[in-house]
Length: 247
Length: 260
Ligand SMILES: Nc1ncnc2c1ncn2[C@@H]1O[C@H](COP(=O)(O)OP(=O)(O)OP(=O)(O)O)[C@@H](O)[C@H]1O
Ligand SMILES: [Mg+2]
Image 1 (cartoon, rainbow over the protein chains, first blue to last red):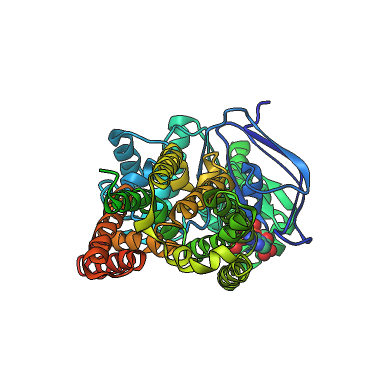
Image 2: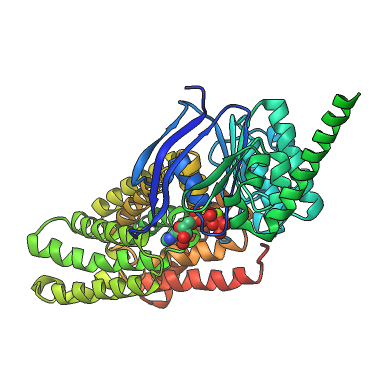
């Protein structure tokens, strides 16, 4: 199996209900790939991610994860119980203990160096999100699974975040599976985009997806922006070829 | 030394405190206060059954408390709005237990001993059982410490690390049932959950890490046991309620020193 995770015919029911949340989804992610899942609220993105991780029962289909696959996961909503006194440093050592060096390294990397002694409850939303990412980077993951990782980040933070993801991939060869609503940035940063709405509407390269009618129907005006992005690149490219041809 | 009823009482109380510290911290962290209540209240039904079938009170209460803990735990996993349901279960368990115990003639006379404990009547056998049980529960919690903590903090993160939150819930249910059985003679069914929550709540504001909180809660529970027993001896107050009163006093003082 060359894929890190391979799934076919995934069907998921709503917890405690009988309506389908996802129907017949095929999915795979290969080493070093950045795959982004986009789709409107409630379209089943988080459910897909959780099913791929084995956190959700399947009504049909199957998921194969490469044996021993090391995954770093940042869930969409992490409500850490405020009644547990917990420093950032202690949090990084759950459930596997890590050394001070490694803790400092990942925190510095995600831009929150030196917060070790702070209580989790005393972090801002964006700082907490960075700590979660730092925790996911511990233990040398082969696959990062990030469900809306940029929520709560400021604009420079979002840009820096996608840079960081690129950098991590380049340095460690880790694959990245991401859920995101930042369409414009996603289109630049991903190798492959999956557009989800209860089923896979369309998937492929960012360029392919952004011009697909299904995607445009789903995202309407916002999709124009991403399409324009690619038209621009596209036209540019053609011009270039024309010129080359003319000479 | 063990011949002295007061020394035995102190040792029994300290055995309970040693478990109530860590377990009470989990009860606070996981917001399981009603869960503790329901399990502890079920113990009265356990006493009634034990007396009726002439089996050990410890075994009877532990089994009934465990059944209750498992039932509640299954419900919690399924439903979201649990507050009302837990309240219903907790109070029904108590009422049903009281009705059941009224059918057992020999229990009627010392009903209050089961409701509020009778720590001054603890014998050598009880003491041995309390300390053996406490050691067992502490070993269980220590063994699974990192996993229990992760699952209490966030189930999704726990699952991603290969931890099954259901197993950890089961571990806590089991530990709770054992504690309930061990405490029935010390603080009684009505005050067991107070013994869990009050010291842990007092420790919360004084602690910056889960381990410190467990340590502080244990220390506070131990102080409450000694303070309560001292009061009971010198002021002739009932022992179980005095212990909880001491814990409540420490809680109030702790509020003045909150840090986090
Ligand atoms: N715990 C739950 N209980 C019941 N229904 C749920 C639960 N979680 C999700 N659902 C339902 O499953 C569907 C898909 O939810 P999911 O969280 O996968 O969507 P999403 O694409 O991640 O949305 P968002 O962009 O808002 O994060 C939704 O219709 C939602 O109502
Ligand atoms: Mg989601």
